[in-house]
Length: 454
Image 1 (spheres, rainbow, N blue to C red):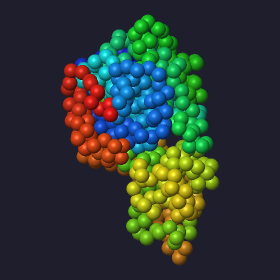
Image 2 (tube, rainbow, N blue to C red):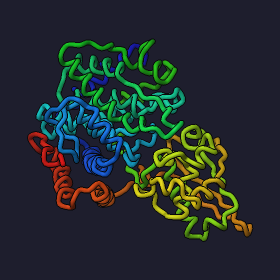
Image 3 (tube, one colour):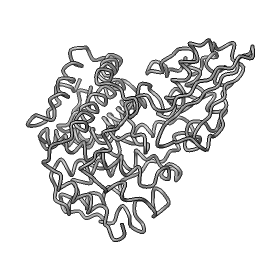
């Protein structure tokens, strides 16, 4: 694709497909994102990091931080909602990337919609475009952003949010490309949170959401960004993936005709996505008699691509320092699942993280890298338990439950939403009002979220 200016090509594709009927599957995914993300915002609204995000934002305005009485400017609402919805790691995932697109895109689009009174069809198109840019861009140079030390959701989120807001606001192709260029200089997010279970990962999609929003506003006002932001010598791929070699066809080919974001996965467990297949294996093994005291050792086959995030340093992963760090520990999550089953929000407490029974199991977990593991195309799990009596129990999970091979149903996602709302203190009536809003949001004249501010 020599000679192609990626941002301009994206802008042309977005303009060409505006006004066409949205694919039913993509619309359904967008509705599911509205449901899932709102529930996650409510579930986290009492957490300290959300309180910090809200109180540290200076500017008030007319945009809604879901579940909070205070109205913020659009950037502030995007930041708080993006931070809250990603904060418990219970949010959507695109398997090929991996990226969490909804938590960067939906907060940016809802904030823009309230500020600019965007109609429902434009909101839908903006969400679809933003998620599509993030998901497709994650395939251009797979695994290289993580290897370079950056969080793909953070850096690609700024680009996707800018694309989605620009699409919803119907900007011309020149402004679209300039907004992409500006967003490239706003993008950021390192993965050093892994060292101590710090909260910075939680803010990555929130920062990306507000960055994309601000980039579009700057471009609309005449501020110029580099058109070659994606592929340039000193561009996005060079800066965040340490390469200038990428498959730009993954981003551009068939854009607007074939929506890869239709396959966004929704999580059944409140922890790192690649851990989920291991949890499913552990739950089945527990039913076969793998009780904690009788276990001699646990061996797992894993992909090399996430060893540095979920397995190493192994001793630290066996004894995570806090509940947030436990969300990114395969050994700890295996211990919890073997003893308690489903790994929901209630799993990640100080008491559980210090529980000697869970830690005893986690201390017996080891891994080896399987060079044939299909990650990131598929997320798999393989757990083999050797009992003290010599019995060997083994389970494999070939794919992500909740992903494209075994998606959660709409009723399952709505039930997850209701549970998250109850966890965060919303009554059933308010939860049902949001579900009604989500079902009709893309058919309305404009977006008003005032009734969901408390």
